[in-house]
Image (cartoon, rainbow, N blue to C red):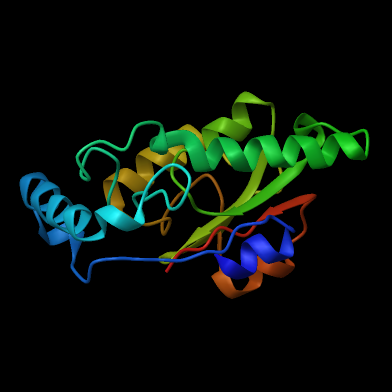
Length: 176
């Protein structure tokens, strides 16, 4: 976070905190209890003007006992930031070919603005379609298989090639 905020000239430092566990192997109750203990331990370090905890990979706001607004906050920030940058150049999301490293929910936010998602990747692989991926189908496939592999609405590609794939907007979300 320190590097991200420094590059953007945002006057905040940055930190990451976490709990070493495997959320996929824990029940919702276990995650909530673990989060409660962690929150008690860091209570004096967090707050709206100092540090705002948020769910990360493998968890969501419900797992963490409620983190109001977090489900869509990051994705909305990415969309709003992209819109603002494109506006500086007189362009709209609806005119762009968008490539992103997978963040669940972000695709629907870009689609709502008319964006065409031409490639996505996550830790399991990458898939591309120069005419735009059919995101609802991809979401169903990914939910059922926990992977992009075998999705018939696009071509599989090496995730390492994603950063040099043709697009107008690259969303390099951190995963894996």
